[in-house]
Image (cartoon, rainbow, N blue to C red; front, side, top):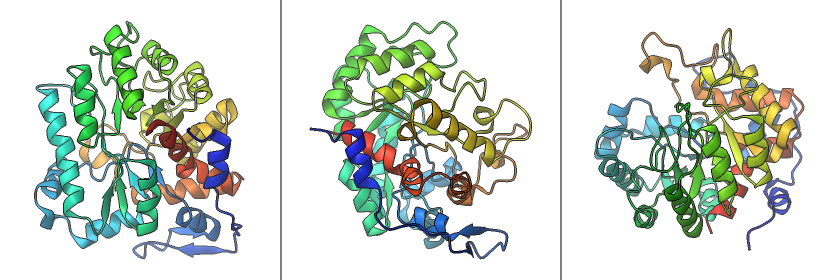
Length: 361
C-alpha cells in the first residue's frame, strides 16, 4: 500500500534543527555568491530533485559524453555535483521523423552513460534509488521522454519500461493520445490515450502533463489511478502562456496527489518585463496558497548555463541569475520568505519523492 501524503511528508523531514548562524561563500570564482547556513544545511540535508533538469543544453557535447566515456571530465562531474541537485530528469521531446527510433536511442544511451560512470552516476528506477543516490554522493538520473508518440501500441509502454523509462509526458504537440498546449482545439484524452494511461498506471510509469492542452490535462488527472505530474510548468494566473497550468488544473492535480515542478524559463515565469528569481518564488507561493505546499516542486527546464547561450537573439533566461547556483538562490529565497525548513525540504524534492513512491509501485 502506498504511503499517505502526510505520513510520507513526515518521514522525509530531517529531525535536526536548521539554524541560520551566518553567511558562507560558495563557488570560489566569485565573491558575490554568499548563502546563509540555513540554505546550505537545507540543500545538504535534502534529496534535491529537478524533475526537468538537463545535464547540458549543448546537445553535441552531451552526445559526446554519452558516446565516449572519456569526454566527461572530472571537472564536468564536479560542476554537476556542486549545483546542489541530487537527481536530474533530463528528458527531451522528439516530435519529428522516426520518434520511436529516436526515443529508443535516447533511452538506451542514458542507460549506457550511467553504466559507464557508476562512480558518479546512478540510474533511478524505483523510489529507494532516490535516497541511495543521495547517500552514495552520486548524481541520480531518471530516464524519461517529453513525448509519448514512441508508444506506437500499448505494448510499447512495457518495452520502454523494461529499458528503464520511468516518466513519459503524454503529449508535446497533438498526438494520438491527446492535445498539446499549442493546440487551440484540444480534443482531450483519446480512447487510445486512456489505454496508455491505464498501462502506465499498471506498470508504474509516471504520467507527465506539462505540455498537454487544458482538456487533456484535466482528463489525464481524472483518468489516472495514481498521482499525475506536471514536471515543468508554472501558474497561468501569473504568466499568461498556454504552457502554464490553470488554477483548476493545479488544484485537481494536487487533490489527486500530484506535484507541479516550477520552471525557470523566462516566458513561463512572467509574461513581460524584468524577470528574476523572485518571480519564480511567486509561482511557488501561488501553488502553496492555492493547493498546499505539498503540491509544488522544482522542474527548472534548463541546465547549469541557461538557455540564452544556445538561443540566439531570443531571451529565455531570468535576469541576474547564475544558473550554476540556481538551487542555492531559490532556497535562499524560500528562507527569506519565511518558509519552514520542513516545507523547503518538500519543495526541494520531498514532494516529488512522495509522489514517485506512490507511482512507481
